[in-house]
Length: 193
Image 1 (cartoon, rainbow, N blue to C red):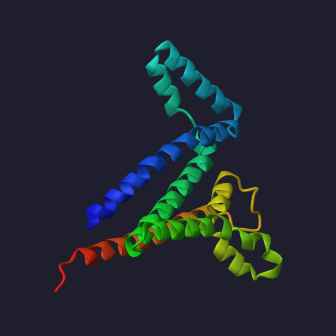
Image 2 (image 1 turned 45 degrees about the vertical axis):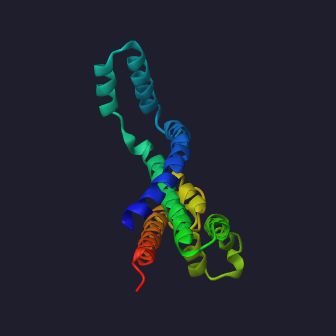
Image 3 (image 1 turned 60 degrees about the vertical axis):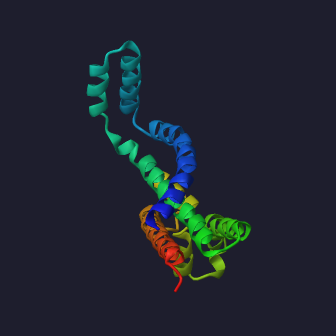
């Protein structure tokens, strides 16, 4: 049962990782532009060294880079990966528990829509809701978490550790859905008595 579920997850992750890797240049350009000029010069030196074939110089310069400017982008990539893990486990969860693939697809799309858009609504309706409820629901929103990881200047009413809380919560929820999916597949594969 575990190999079946892992196989489904691998297939889903293949395409998702292609999409995620396509966002890396954007994250690193944002990190590059928000870095001090001295660090930008080092990155330019690495690029020139690689083009001219001086790999030793490129390696030495790479080791001297202060990655603190890139840290927010790395946090954003971690948040993206955790959110994608959750979204793919939602898909295989519904696939395992619902007999018709069209219904499971609809449920998965609905759950991911609520995860992506629905959890952001309380932030915009914050005047009518208690603060603890807004924080709890928006913690599950991947866009708020990525924004907070990349820049502390967005979603200012939410805590600075929103990205970490989101990553932990969503990873745990994804792991729980994965375990439930494995248990369901295992129960379906047992011989009938």
